[in-house]
Length: 276
Image (tube, rainbow, N blue to C red; front, side):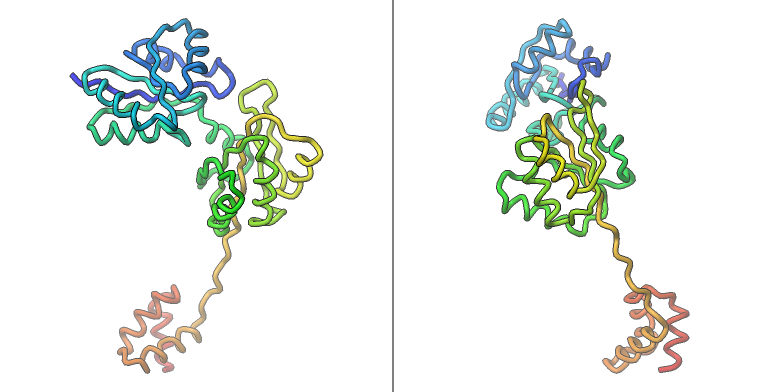
């Protein structure tokens, strides 16, 4: 009988956020794959759980991933944990999930702490549509290229950032998105000194230039304001129909194509076409 892979989220700061189901899954698993076994051991000791730990992180994920998959196929159950939050989200566990899926292994994700959703929900930014961009590159050129690819992004954007890189990231964001772009800086989520600063990129640069940032940040940046296209007029439709007819299209086909191109009702274009 084949085993399973469980994705077990761990607290991002407050140990009280571990759920009963997460605790039970860790207790019942045959072994636990952990990003940092030292960090996970502290959590297990807090929960009073003794379990075999396997190291699984960015630099050994290929070798250890194969071994974990083989153990699961042999019938064992594995619980995957990251240092904090949900495994496989901006985390090497993404690769293990892919390997298990390819091997036909059932993967079960248990809901729980996730910094992305926690920050978004308290940011005060639009939550209807959003995109998670993870950590930006430490290299300025790559970081700017990443941000420039998002210039027209209208969805709320979410980034992870370390305190020592925060100012450089904010300065690049201001250069690309504009200093007036709204941002919510969510710091030390669920911890004693949790803080949300709702401001603009320009004001955030001033704040953290004066007061060096501390703690891990989730940056929630407002999306670009969509640019409304100018509505085409019947005169525009008449001109386009005439152009298409000169190119050899029949009136019927010219009307159909013009209606699609200018996003106008076909009857409006047809009425305009009668003037051609």
